[in-house]
Amino acid sequence: MKIQTSFALLLLLFTCRQQVFTQSPWKPAGDKILTPWASAVNPAQPLPEYPRPQMQRGHWINLNGLWDYAIRPVSDAEPAVFDGKILVPFAVESALSGVGRAVGKEHHLWYKRTFEAPKDLKDNRLLLHFGAVDWRCTVWLNGREAGGHQGGYTPFSLDITPFLKKGAQELVVRVWDPTDDGPQPRGKQVKKPGGIWYTAVTGIWQTVWLESVPATYIRDVLPTANIDNNTLTVEIGVKDFAKDDVLIIRLSDAGKTVAEQTTPAGSNAVLTIGNPKYWSPAQPFLYDLNIQLLRKGKVLDEVNSYAAMRKISLTPDKNGVQRLMLNNEFLFQYGLLDQGWWPDGLYTAPTDEALRFDIAQCKQMGFNLLRKHVKVEPARWYYHCDRIGMLVWQDMPSGDMAEGDRWVTNPALEPVDKIRTPESEAIFKSELKEMVGACRFFPCIVAWVPFNEAWGQFKTEEITGWLMNEDKSRLVNCASGGNFFLAGHIHDYHNYPPPILHRTDIFGQKRAVVLGEFGGLGLPLDGHTWQAKANWGYQSFENAGALLEEYSKFVNTIEGFIPKGLSGAIYTQVSDVEIEVNGLMTYDRKVIKMPAEKLKVLNERLWVR
Image 1 (tube, rainbow, N blue to C red):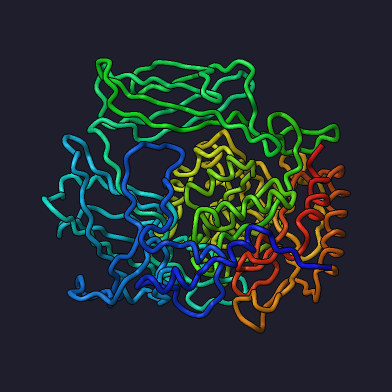
Image 2 (tube, rainbow, N blue to C red):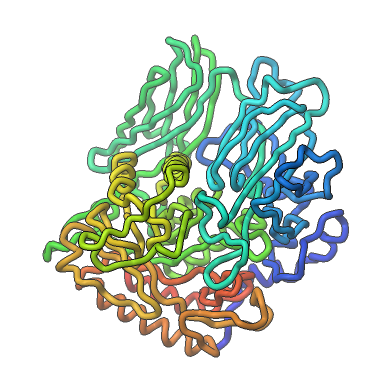
């Protein structure tokens, strides 16, 4: 059987990568494999796309590019001389950073660059946005501390207006990240990669950008659909609004207004939509949303956004087994475990097209779901899922793991919730809250997953209860493959390699039953592996034909489980990652191991009706 390589990737493979690399002082570090998109990275303007598609303004400045960097002991002050150039926003350990160096808890990573402030700032404020910095950072502008942030997966912003001066502005960022030597959430990052654990990611790994806003401005937007009464509630946060300030909210379809409301700043809008179009994987329809902030008839601020009419819920079937419902209809959710790692960028996709490629390719292979595994993505990833029509189960990045973390069959009889330190518990709760706040806009996300396989699992019922109360528009999967509590909406178990079915007569009366991980069938391909030898999968194959035959058996088994009460399943995984070779694509994304058209026929049989 012939291994499939997409035509688009073939075109990218024939681009003149060496010309791009040799015309710049930057080039990828190390000798590991690269994706085809590495050749499209422009060191003068990497990842130039608007980084916050859920709330867009017209004027902004991208600060991605070559910055100065230095790695120094934590006891040292800001270095007088830096070590060289780093390509932001790629983590310092990655090839695309141009550095490829480890940092560790004994060192700080320093960044420095200059920029010009907008000349038409006038009475406006200048916000400095960071998509994500792993893990603790402090920011100085022109020698004065402007603020900082703790948390490796969520965006934060600083009002740097008071720190501006005439002429060039000097920006300095200091980062400390203990990786697996600290109490913070860090997903699969470790100092010594191996097995299912991967290379550490330190420092800036998402876009850094500037935005000019008025003194009173729209701070955030959150649309929430109610398809049962055809309404869309829009919550709008406004910074420093006056008593008589008003908001005009317009919802449109292909340029035609379908709902409009004027409301006082500080209050929510409730739009009624006649004959609404629902969002689903089969028809991912998005409405355009425009919001204007006015004072005495004058527009102070304006943002463009979008919204979807979709509902995720549970309903018992004729046998009393709870089912996952989308828009009040049962939809079997079948997807892939998505680690979100790249051989050249690690946590950061080399280009926006690469970021979109994984989602689109999974859809073409017949999946309707991605479980974003112990990682949080940039906003544009979720935006692409919204547009393409891909459901998402969003994991909380795990951390504070220990040898005592284990799985047991009956936590009611054998308490297993881990006792954390007050520091690590506070960090986890704070970063979980930030993750939900940053991601809850996106309609593609239909479930939160706070814990995976008992990794750092603690106070499960409390954490699950908080999530259910914080976001009533989604389901909560309390512990995917972890220690099971009667909490949340989903009973989730793992089994490798073949799929199995837990008893739905026990677990399915109160929660939907899903198989959160299975499969992991491995096929290493020469020239496309992170390392030449000692790669692994849960079951290894020598050719694509044998792999497809076994995978087909698994799908047939899953199909037989659906009428018995199974509501969803997650196959491991989207792509190979470092020494894992159990992906449907190679780590460099250059080869699809089984024909996409055959996978599509197999997979869509489970959910397309």
